[in-house]
Image (cartoon, rainbow, N blue to C red; front, side):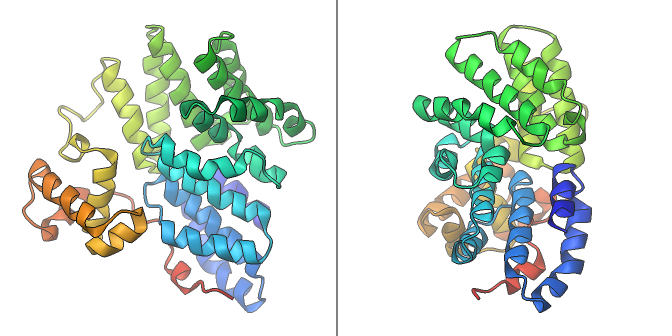
Length: 326
């Protein structure tokens, strides 16, 4: 059953995943298969992180439960989801605070899943020794792993070569892109295309635009809004007018952090609730809202929901609210 859920997440069948989770969770609870319930909610949080709807309090609660069951794979999965929530909005410093837990993981499956992101963040934060240590573990990960791991190792080497200048990163990118499984993994494929497009753009290559467009199409199909925003920004920087976009929307003028605060306020959360979720003070929340309201053309919290009309719903499943410490 778990492998079926993993496949649904990896292949971008996120609606089907949510439907299965809702249908199967009650049976798992009745059978007291708590580790499976926790892991499924960890996968759900991974989807939420990609969609910009990550809930840190929910993650902390699940992590405590996974730790109590000595479930190292699920703990690693939750750390990766938390790191992804920060990477989606470009905050590598916050991402490193959780992804550094996976630089020497006890669970090999967690290492394979988060491999590229751990190296990405280590490089961005100047943790070169950690990045090199992870790269040296690449052959061990490949030895008996799923075929996608080989593509991930190539992707990681491309990031290292881009940052260090020790080799041409383009052959590594091409090797990863030519993996036969990559097109079946839309989220990983889109993020690989985004990175490849950035390399091509730095070399003033027109092919970067095609890479960004392809990445954007996949992000939009997945409703991965924060990643789609990154792809649109890269297209605009490459001199391309994104279809349907004439000028940046009001919300695109905000920082990613302010946008997250606005979105949570639009969902009805109080300043205190938002502060607890994002680990900031209620006063800081109020300050962000005070500065953002005139920028987006609203006068009160009641007007906020219209800014996000049509945005994907919060990734938290209603059933997750029933998950208690057992």
